[in-house]
Amino acid sequence: MIPPNNPQERERVPAVIEGTKFAVIGGEVGCITLVIVLLAVFGGLWLDDLLGTRPLFTVGLVLASAPISLVLTFWVARRAINESNKTSRITRDPSNLTEGEKTGE
Picture 1 (cartoon, rainbow, N blue to C red):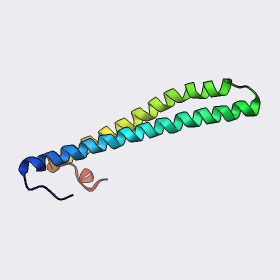
Picture 2 (tube, rainbow, N blue to C red; picture 1 turned 180 degrees about the vertical axis):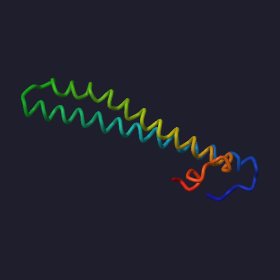
Picture 3 (spheres, helix red, strand yellow; picture 1 turned 30 degrees about the horizontal axis):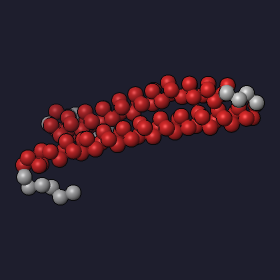
Picture 4 (cartoon, rainbow, N blue to C red; picture 1 turned 135 degrees about the vertical axis):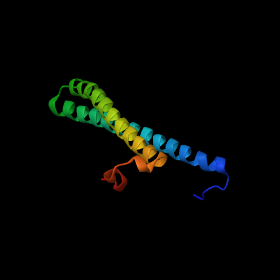
């Protein structure tokens, strides 16, 4: 990406990058949720076929996948917020950082 010459455009570029980061995080959360639910459904169907208990394991695993998805969504969102706060703090005033934060340790 070529840096813009216009000062207003230069101020807008970090906002676009930040928005893109959050869009990627949203996609990540969606994919994680989809994978967990699909694993629960197909794992439940496989166990039900194996043991002859048609809806029992499928329903149980799908219901159990909801809290797991919520916990993982919360974890991914917290990680993204922490990284965003760290990045914005460095961008605003790098002199406030400790030596370890400056080097990424």
